[in-house]
Image 1 (cartoon, rainbow, N blue to C red):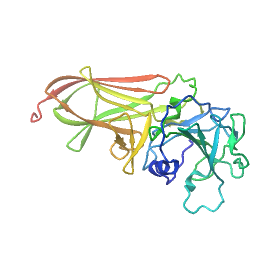
Image 2: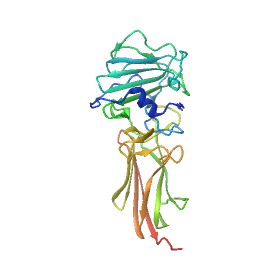
Image 3: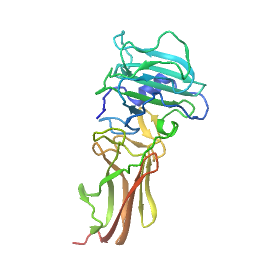
Image 4: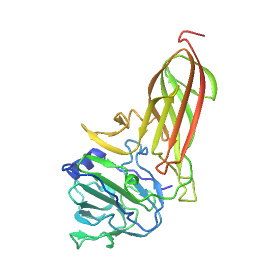
Length: 301
């Protein structure tokens, strides 16, 4: 499983990229020929959201996702000082006024250094495992300077063939610090409850078990939307990164553990309740779970 840790937060990346200007993100090309997706945007990275995607496929050439200007290059082993060394050997490109892309963990000594502008046909490096990386892969990010956001690359890259549905391992409610795993039909106590979902999206691009984050999680109660979390973009506010289109959920108030997330708190009224949870990936594959609950009064035994 390709995973890595790095100390660089989204907030520091925001400052590095100088988020200003106005524009709209356009489609980009995959930066490698062998598109082996091993990690998705928004995953749990122990103390922060994963702010890009990881691409495996072994040692292969890296190309710019679009024609652009070289803003910065760094090769592992240089004088690091205050640079984000967790990225290993990396490059930052500017595309027009508004979009920047980052290519990290490239092979030491492979990063292109003799050009100020590049085209999609150029080789800007080789996939490696420099920096805080476990296994050879390319970490790829897309920054929208117009909105001041790091966006999910899968929303602007050509789509990949994907026929595997996300997996919902469990749905639970948390009441008074007690977590109850839901069954298709059961009786629960009424009142305020937090909805916790254990969910992941299996990668069909590798032979080993490689769970990834889904793209969207939706919950409805009696046909009305309770929560909708979409892993589309991250934005920094006062030093904290938030999922943009999902009520600005921060890492600390969203992730319970590696794959369990707390969607939010809702009220269970006495009577019958139909709760549905749906998980979708970027290709539109989805898995749903329905629960028919008999809700007792909060003081009932």
